[in-house]
Image 1 (cartoon, rainbow, N blue to C red):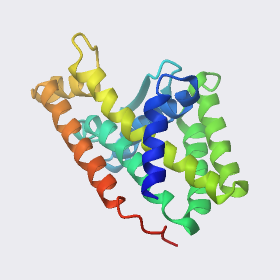
Image 2: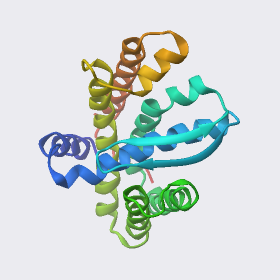
Image 3: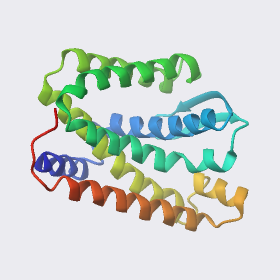
Image 4: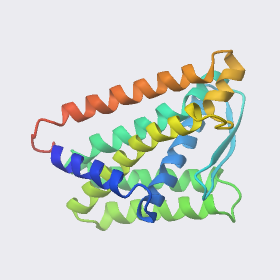
Length: 218
């Protein structure tokens, strides 16, 4: 399993700027916005809509809830989706039902919250839900494992690069970190630094755990 994980990291780095990985980048943005929505729900807020764009942008409109926690949720949330996918790839018997369940969750979110109905975000999310359900029902174990592992690795790498782009680039524009800085008074670079360090630590821990070449769990 460790070498499969390494191979996925190599594929992601080699083809990062290739159109082949573009759908996975959009999926990571969807995970990011969905993480904001989940924390909004958990803290008593109301999610009005969410959307992603073809330029890897996203927005989640929420009223109420704990604004600080909601703003904090995007990067750690998408990282957790990615790490969860990596852990799932080790579990043979869980792959099929979890892929179908993930597709069903994305379908539900798409129909209920992604707006506008005629737009890139809605069409992409609908197609993504269909792909996960189809892969879970009809895909081979090897295809299921490779796909979910690639999703996980891409999401983890995207988080690191996105933090660099949004927080540490001069004139990076509005980001979760800048909004948090406005809301809390803590500088954006501190938020970015904390997220970046946490992401590196968790990704490193996952890689070390998988350096043991044990067989996959049932």
